[in-house]
Each structure stands twice: as C-alpha cells, then as structure tokens.
Amino acid sequence: MKAPVFQVGRVGFQLDRFELVDGERCEVEGRWSGVRGRRFMRPALTLVIDGHPTRLLADLADKPWAAEDGEPWRAAFPCPFPGGDLAEAELSVGPDVTIALPPPTNPAGTGRKRRRAGTRARETPPGRGPVTAATPPAPAGAPADGGAREIREARSAQRRLERQLERAEADRAEAAARIERLTNELAQAEHERDQARAECDRQAAEREALEGERRREVADRDAARRTSEERTAERDAAQRAHQEALETVRTAELARDSALGARDAALTAQARATAERDEALADRDAALAERDTAEAARDAALADRAQALRERDAAGAAREQAMTDREALARTNERLQAELTDLLSARGAAMVMRRAAQETPASRPYAGMLGLLPLAVAAIAAAAIVVVVLLVGGGL
View 1 (cartoon, rainbow, N blue to C red):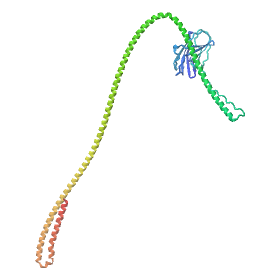
View 2 (cartoon, helix red, strand yellow):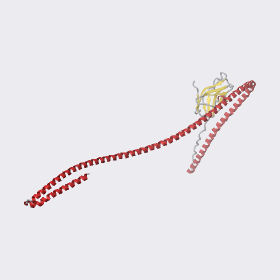
View 3 (cartoon, rainbow, N blue to C red):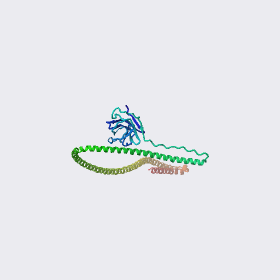
View 4 (cartoon, one colour):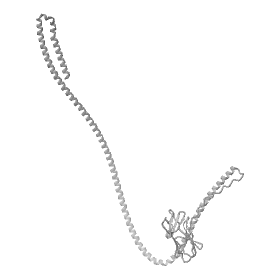
C-alpha cells in the first residue's frame, strides 16, 4: 500500500510509519519535501483522547528539527497511553506547518474503539486581504462639488482604514505566530521539567550504583590518564612534525625566492641579449646597405672601365685607320713625286722645245705661251703636294 502524502502549501510529508510502541511512546517516520532552507522547531504531537487533547514534545535524541528533502525523518514522543478512544492526531513542526495524522497503529490493549480521522492539512490562517467598503452614495440634492469632495474624503478614509486593517491583520498574524512559539516553548519547558523530575527519580535509583561505578570510574580515570599521556606524546610528536613541516616550507620558500631571483636575472640577461641581437641586426643591415652601395659603385666603375676599353679600342682602330691612311698618302706622295719627276722631265723637254722654237722664226708668236706652260705644271704639282701633306697631318 502506498504511503499517504500530506501537503501543507509547498511542504509535503509522506507518512511511512505512525505507531504507539509498548504503550509508552509514539514514533513517527516519513519523508519531507519542499523544506529546503527551513529549520523545524521542536516537533509537537497533539493526541485527542476521549475528546481531550494531549500535547507531546519530541524526544531530542533523534534531533527531529533537522529535515532534508526526500531523506528519512524520525521523531519519538514519550506518551504513557492511559487508554481511551484515540480519535485523531496532529503533528506540528513549525508555526505554519501542521499535519493531521490518522490514529497510530498497534495501540495498547485490543478491541479498543478507534475512529479513523480524515486526512487533512491545516495551516496558520493567512491574513485576510483588505476589505473593500462600498462608497456611500451622495445625498439627494447635495451640490456636485461638495459630493465629490465628500466622496474623495470617504475614499481617503477608506484607504486609511484598509491600511490600518492590513497592519492589524499583520500584527494579529505575528501575535498568533508568537503565541504559537511561546506555547511550544512552554510545552517544551513543561516537558523538560517532567524530564528533570524523572531524572531526579532515576538519580535516586542510580545513587546506589554510583559507589560501584566509582571504582570503575577510578579505573577508567587511570586509563584515561594513560590515554591522555599517550595523546600528549602524540600531540608533542605532531607539534614536532608541524615544526619540521614549517621549516621545510620556509626552506622551500627560500628556494622559490632564489629561483625567482635567478629567473629575473635570466630575464634581464635575455633582454640584454635581445637588445644586442637587435643592434647586431641593425649593424648587419647597415653593412648590407654599404655592401650594396659598394657593389653599385663597383658596377659603375666596371661600366666606366668597359666604356674606357671601348673608347681605347675605338682609338686603336682610329690609329690603325690613320696609319693605313698615312700609308696610302705616302703611296700617293710617292706617286706625286713620280709625277713631279715626270713633270720636271716634261719641263726639260719643254725647255728643249722652246729653244728649238726660238730657232724657228715661224713659231715666235707662240713662244710666250710655250714658255709659261712648264711654270703652270710646276705650280699644280706643288699645290698637289701641299694638299697631300695637309691630309696626312690631319689624319695623324
């Protein structure tokens, strides 16, 4: 059969077991949901026996005020059951969380009449909302402006009354919660008083056993002393180990600081090396630029040298041409010398002919012209020689 689940607002409780054990205590077991962030007060169980409610507080041994969603939860309530008709029960774990439970199973005695209470959940009544009062109608025949002013005043008074009512409801709810809390504290105090009385009775019963327990306590005290001495020795050893660990940590910190210093020095050296490398790269770039300039100058010098060689070759060719021309002129000179020699021979012949003409009377009118012919030939030959010499001198 599935366990019943009781819901109060967002808080739910799944009842797994509710029993009256040995006629002395009631035990409640179940699982809560929706209680994240909540902390229960000391749970209280109210039993209605023969129409009379009996309020019980949970035993603190189970720590029932700690509850987690879906986790098992248990509370035990000391309850010497006097007998009678147990009609219904209620479990309260907070001012606003009260669960109505069915009667517990396995009550003391048999054949007792039990009535099954309907499953219900009850919360602390929330504060009522503001009551909206009807606006009173304006009296017949009243002026419109006066009626509107009265309506505004009535509405303003209504709002004030509503705010007062809300504050009163909040104060009433707070007072109810405070009364519930004080009631729980009073019930807890009464239960603790009852426990104190029971404790006194138990102490009276246990006083007789204290004498025997005292001897055991002496033995336990001796054992505890030995245990304390052993713990003291362990504590001293732990302190020594702690000191050694601290020394190790200090040594490690010194080593770390030294390593950090070495790293900083290495970073500085690296930065210096980087700067030197950059300077070397700049010098290399400058040297490359100078080399490029020198190579350009060398190429220009080589071009000039090639031009000079070409000009030298041209001058040599011109000189050879001049020598060739000079040789040609020399041959021409020799030819002209030969022609001059021929002319001189012709002149001698002409002079012979002139003398012969002088001897012939009939040729006298042409004697002057024949005398001038050798002179003209000699002048032409001299002019040709001068032209050849000038040509030869200009070519050289």
